[in-house]
Length: 228
Image (cartoon, rainbow, N blue to C red; front, side, top):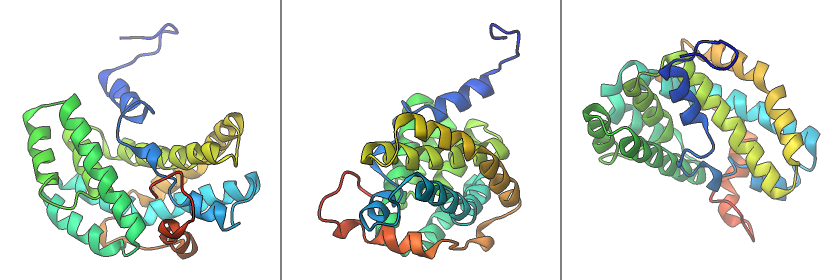
């Protein structure tokens, strides 16, 4: 199949677009990825600070998310083991809760949209454990036939999009500013994905402890738009 310009499209491309679409119902827009707490604390008062926040979040995702995503993508049968490791690694209660909510929602949505036997079995397994996002997404994307590199790109894209969507709702950035920042983040997204390609659960690390501390304060905010 080709588009109007004669470029070849295949079902893998269309699957990725569907998964990346903001209309794919996983509940990601209920979360600010720690931005709301950072904003209320005065750490992200403007676009320049938001740009730095996005970069730090991407770097952190490269060492705190992609290693588990990679490992689960390579070995979906290890989901329960990797899920337990994610639960131990995420000592921040806010991040831990958000990870479980997002992972279970992603799995349940996939089971409803693509109810093949393998997907349904995997979703049943997710419901038997904590269901943390990184290993669940890695295992589910492998089951759906999404290649590992594309899975990493999808995860990082969704991370940046989530932060910037929260920034718009918080009034830190306008819609056009957010789209420009999303585009500007692309080279770093690709670089983080490249550096993370060979990592697995043995490489887990926290690269942005200040962001982690800020996110941990989310539940103590006087008023909140987001769950985390």
